[in-house]
Length: 293
Image 1: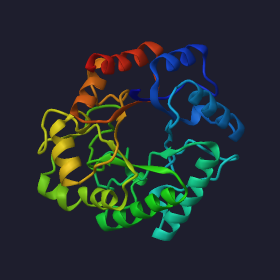
Image 2: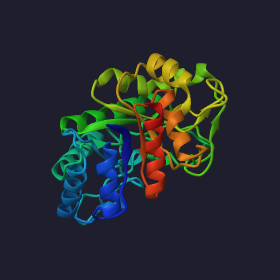
Image 3: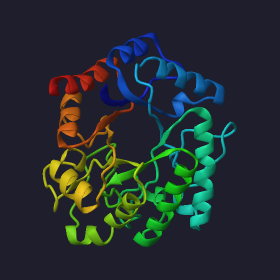
């Protein structure tokens, strides 16, 4: 089984995508707004995706946080508020449980949430209102409520972005963020929600940040840093679950797609995320695993 989660182009699979997925046998798939027109169509697409692979437990992911980051929208699905606008743990839980029921009904099994990053003044807005608060205690309480709501509704949560994306001075989709905050401060702030979430769930996945933390590893982003994954994410934070990279198409990463995937897997990611691209790019990502064998 190929340790890659792929996206697809549209509302149904193209013949080229179908042929590639049947050959590559990826771990799972991720859906975006471009793939979600109506409940019946999403269910049919998920059935198509699952029919391509030989394994039975096929994770179907989505980013359904709320606010700016929603793939399922009205009129077929309920509007979902941004994290920062929610004002109680109960409201967060109720929203997450309702969301989980919608996802489960479609056949989606994994939601890339909660975003447990902090809202940091002066940082890039890529996290912004996706964060519950600037206060680690509130982020912890509300992230735990979202995690519980998703899990109570039968959905696997993805804790993101380990070990913390809130301080990023630029958008990692567009360029490489470098965070210069000392480790001692990160331990007292950014790591706090992640440690609590890790302790609360044995089922949740984790997603890495494409961010350089100069006090931890001045050369490699967390996704591609063996030191950060081993010493910080796995040991300091204590996350022992399934760890997936953020998307390989993001411009914070350099090199070919084969190199990006190779570095991420070698550092300790259990799988990599490839949300969009040509079949040639998809094949380049698959090549990284074949070269590792």
